[in-house]
Each structure stands twice: as C-alpha cells, then as structure tokens.
Length: 309
Ligand SMILES: [Zn+2]
Image (tube, rainbow, N blue to C red; front, side, top):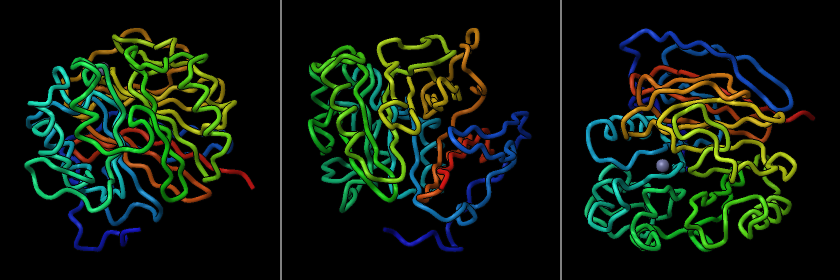
C-alpha cells in the first residue's frame, strides 16, 4: 500500500466560487451527518484509510478532462475506477490513448501507449460504456487494458473493499438484466466476498433523473446480494438516490459536457451538474466515505456508510 500523502502533496485547489450545494450524508445502516459544500481540505487532510477515485464519462480529450484528471491526482488515490465512456466518440483504437493514457497513464498497468511508462501494477479499473462498444466487440478497450477475469465484468479486492465492475451495455454477450449470466456471476461472487465493503459499478445507472433516465435492466437486487454501494455514469450529472435502503450514485461529470436534469426520480435525494468533478472514497473496515468534489475543489456531496458492530 502506498505511503499516505506527505505534507508536500499538492493540495486540492481551493474553491474559487461559493457553492450553493448543501447536503448531509446518507447511510444504509448507521447514518452519519457530514457538512459539505465547503472547500475540500488539502489531500493530506482527508481522513486516513484506503483511497480510490471514481470518474465517469471522461474520455473526451481536452481542458475539461484535464482539470478532472488534475483533481484526481491531487486525491492521491491508490486506484481509479471508471463508470464508463472511457473513449469518445466511438471507442476507437485511434483515439483511446489520447482520451485515456494522456491523462491517466500513470495508473494503467501493462501500459503500451505514448504517455510515459504506466504503472508497475495496474491501478486503473474501468467499466465499459456504450461509447466503448461503438467499435466492434469493444476491441480497442479490451486490447488497451489488462484486467481481471473476462475484462468486461470482473472483480478485484484492494484494501477493505471488494469491487465488482459490471458491463451494463446491451452488447454484453452474457446479458445485463437480473436473470442474466452476468447477474448470476455477481450474486455468486458477492456471496464469496470477505472484504469489509462490496461496491458494484457500471455505466448505465439503475436510477437517474438525467435525460437517459433509469435503466430497468440494471435494477438488480444488489442489497440482497450483499452490495453496499452502487456507482454508475452515463448521465453527465452527479446524483445520489436511495432505493430499498441502498445508496446509488451517478457520476458522469468526468469530462464530457454536462447534462440538464429531467424530473427527479422517486428515490433521488441530491442532484448536481454545474461543474465537472470526481469522487474520492476513503475506506476503513468500519467506515466508507465517498465525496463528490468539483473541479474548483468544492465538496459537493458526501455519503458516509458505517458498519455497526
Ligand atoms: Zn454513456
């Protein structure tokens, strides 16, 4: 495990605009309140624990993706997960390194692109989005990354967390609904998991108030299967919803242009889309804290999940 960030670590940039957003956290078992809408503390001031970053709908080379990548690096995460749409516009081999490696090569294992030497051990765990599937068989993506399992959906464990990357795209050969081979795989793998936290992530959001809306196909019984948190993208928004006691977060603000919201879905508790940003999660075996921070360094929303003992 890397050393915690030192005092010399570049701080998350201070807020340059006041935030109108306020929120309290949501939790499945033991709710805890955390004020937000305040400038993010310096990277070294985040609580101790295992850290990862999550970005969605980011693979669109340019200044917006650049700013999000700088934010992510200031988090000093041990790994980065993605919520799909890694490579706009069509998942092509000709654009993939410019869209991903240009900004995130230092996290990518077995890296063979043009932006440095990559990571000695993979620290970049993407999920497939619809744009990644627009090239036949998502071949450029599968060639570019070296991932566990079949690389389309897979599990890995780091720190106190078991991660489950899902492929929510209709092109997925093993299906995407709750009766699919993929869903049976998740149920079986989650039952075997022994980390403190189980997190599922994918591209198409089960619940979303954005223009794409909720994806019925991906509304699986996650909680019954032992999942603690579900992350998704696709709508270029940030949203927190709670359904059946489980927190669902949408984050599609990684670089592509922001979307406007439609009418709020019933379980929606918080919505934001004014600026790009990324999520930082800090986990110990007792607490999982996940914060959406915008590119101005403002903490927009935070969820704290706690295990009861
Ligand atoms: Zn998408």
